[in-house]
Amino acid sequence: MTTTPSAGAASPTVPAEGTAPTAMTHAQVMRALSGLLLGFFCAVLSSTVVTNALPRIIGELGGGQSAYTWVVTSALLTVTASTPLWGKLADQFSKKLLVQAALVIFVAGSLLAGLAQNPATLITARVVQGLGGGGLSALGQIVLAAMISPRERGRYSGYLGATFAVATVGGPLLGGVITDTSWLGWRWCLFVGIPFAVVALVVLQRTLNLPPAKRQVKVDWAGAFFVTAAVCTLLIWVTFAGDKYAWLSWQTGTLIGVAVVLTLAFLFAETKADEPVIPLRLFRNPTITLASAASLFVGTALFAGTVFFSQYFQVARGASPTRSGILTIPLIIGLFVSSTVSGRIITRTGKWKGWLVTGAALMAAGLGLLGTLRHDTPYALIAAFMALVGLGVGMTLQNLVLCTQNQVSPDDLGAASSTVTFFRSLGGAVGVSVLGSVLTGRISHHARATIAQLTPEDQVTAAKASGGRLPDVATLPAGVRTWLEGAYGHGFGDIFLYAAPLALVAFLITLFIKEVPLRSTSGLAQAAEADPAS
Image (cartoon, rainbow, N blue to C red):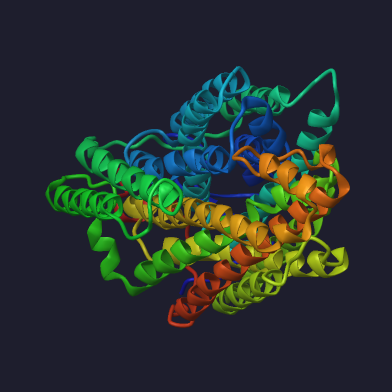
């Protein structure tokens, strides 16, 4: 009879190459995960540290709302496109070397970003950063699944969530301080993750020991190319639709047609590949199919609903970058609390679906309430609504991966984990692009609807302030500033309102995910049981 481990029990893992699966103590597991958590912290920190600096960065580099959106979207694009490939490589190569390679790529992207002299170079650098960040995000979950059983994984996923929360709350605050410090400046926001990455490389070399893959490697380069091309085409369409051309236009038809052809080519390539990037057979499992669909909508709601917070506080409320980071703390507190608490309780009880459903419901409710946002909404209400979203995100993200990993064989852990992450990143990239475009239109709509309230002189100033670049509201006359803050505040409220139904769809999907008892053996232990000779 198989016994179920308690919350404090050791998790069956393989501590070093050439040894049989043994039980590691909590201290040993944490030592093995220390470099991995540091690398994950580096990736998240470098993503969030620029959040509060972006309005100033884009302003100084001469970009507008489209450039602001693309700086975020470009990183999400490569995270999305590379995640399945990282996952598949993790099933075939040394996971440790892959994490270290992702860190090196990430450092190269950070250096390039910090030296950027125009929006185009910065966007290119963010593409490189996203490639490394995609590896760190995907591989973190994969290594966790290899070392730790699903029953124990809730606890350690909570640590991963806590690391995410600390980096997410620390990043904007640190970025705000760096940006507001005259002798540093915003470029150091892009350099700040490099020391953490170097330390993570050293720590990983000393602490993480996993058996290397010992089977023939055949990388599905065709599948990787077609999925990347399809995602790029889709994002180009949704980013420029409504701005460069109408949503219903020949450009839209052309780009959608190309995206469909590339997607069909990808699906065909996967049916022929010996080692497909995304094994289509995984979707025969209803849990994986539903979790992937839910992740798509969760990612759309999450990224689209949170990436514009800093811009809202700085442009619509006139906050400094540092203060903007402080004002977003309720969101992160909610995420931190729910991810750690739910992880521990899941480890103790083995029940995860209730947390998943509740999290999706809270996220939908929080985004719906944020749809009432205006430039003068009392901050106490905004904080409460952000906390609801944070609580929902903390309960949802890790558990969608957990329920997927619990359903697959050890050989598919990497592919299955990265598939869920892929759909979450895809939803986020599309969501940021679409709602970034919608935001531009809504701000223009509200600005035109209220500009008659200004004096003729202020109307001339207003026309210049809304002429394409992100405005510096502190330099505007009082009347024009109030008018512009009102337009931006109403526009941000609109995009949160549009994101809420997407979170509601994710909630409805989670209702149909069947709760399966969590296994009590790790991926490596299962592999050893299936093939003792390995």
